[in-house]
Image (tube, rainbow, N blue to C red; front, side, top):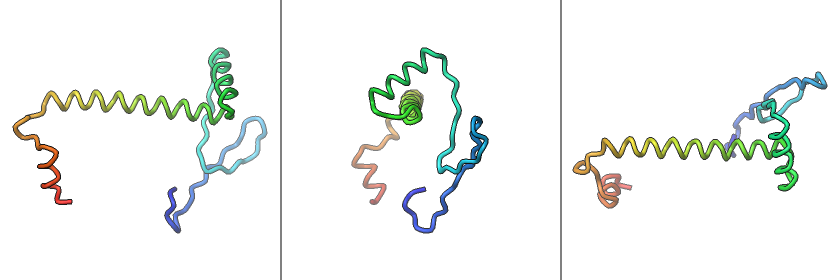
Length: 101
C-alpha cells in the first residue's frame, strides 16, 4: 500500500514446507521448480548482480511482464489504427482545448 495514512497493510501467511512453521510477510510467495541449467543461469545472474535468488527471479519476472505488456499494447495499437477514422481524429492542440485542463 502506498503512503496513505491509516491504510491497512495486508499480511499473507505461509507455511514453509521444510520448517513447518508459519511466516508472516507483506508480499505473497511463489514456489518455482526450475530445471538445473535454468537454475544455474539464474543463480549466476544473481551472484553477478549481488542479489538473492528471490530478488533476481522477481526482477526477471517483472521484466518479462513489462515485455509482455509492451507487446500487448503494440498489437492493440495496430488493431486500433486499422479502425481509426482520420476525419474524426483530433490534433494534439484540439484535444487539449477540448479537455479544458
